Structure formats: C-alpha cells, structure tokens
Length: 144
Image 1 (tube, rainbow, N blue to C red):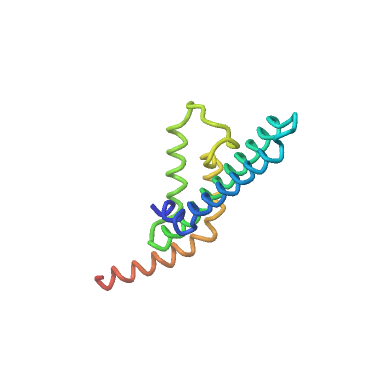
Image 2: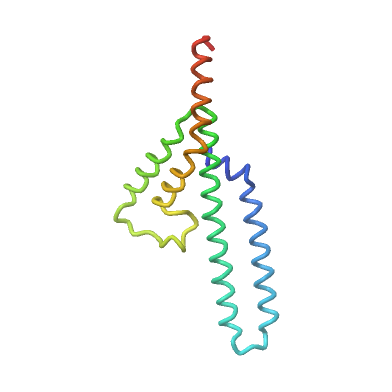
C-alpha cells in the first residue's frame, strides 16, 4: 500500500502525462521536419525507440522512488521495512523459469535490482522504524 501511495504523493501519474505530451510533440515535430526526407521512416523509428526507452527508464525510476517512499511509510507505521526484501524474494521465486522481459524493456526494475535498491535504503529507514517501534511500545505500555 505504501508503494502505491508513494506513486500518488510523488505525482508520478502527472509526470507520466507530461512526459507523454512532450513525447507526442516531439513525434509531431519529427514528422513535420522529416516529411521530405528519404530517411523519414528510419528517423521516426529512431525517435520512437528513443522516446519509448526514455519513458521506460523514467517508469523504472518512479518504481524505485515509490518503493523508497513505501519503505518510509512502513517504517513510520512501525512495520519492519526489511520485510520488503522477503516479499520481493518470494515474488522472484514465483517467477522462476518464466522468462520475462529484459530489464531495459520493462516498466519495473527486476526483482534482484529491487531487492538491492531496498537493501541500500535500509540505513535511511531503519532508524525511522526503530523510533516508531519504541513509540508504539510506549503507547502499549500505557494501555493505548
């Protein structure tokens, strides 16, 4: 849930819309500028591949950012953020032998990349979790 809320609070949907508009305008400009070129189709294809690859890279970045925001939300809520690694390890096991897309064609980071990114973020989120856990323990002791 924190991951999905992270997409909203980081305004990834609005970013995606803006990127789509820019890519569309770039495509229209490429069409106009190459109308009389004998290499028109190759230029348009190259533009489409470049724009598509850029959009995929932004999407993977957004997923990584949403993962981090979700870890922070979990930590603030008193949930151990290290559980995210166990979750993605289970997800990876379920996909074993299923092939899948190469990372550069995917909108999401690979499970292995996601796990590595999450582990790199632990030094920033574990202190948040530890503080929240102490706070919640204090509330329980008070009977709240």
